[in-house]
Image (cartoon, rainbow, N blue to C red; front, side, top):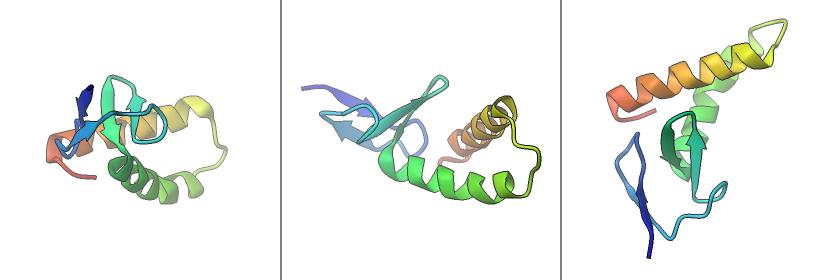
Length: 74
């Protein structure tokens, strides 16, 4: 049995399935709940920026995730 710990909330995910119950973003493993909250937090930032570029999106996502890991929540 494999177990992965979410880097944000520190919750353990038993029998993880990539892309369903946990996600790899950069060097972080995050659970589904934290991934959903991260998307909700980043969505308003993305909608207010034009033009949209993939490198900019990646930077916003990783910066937001780094802050979430430090705080322990998204």
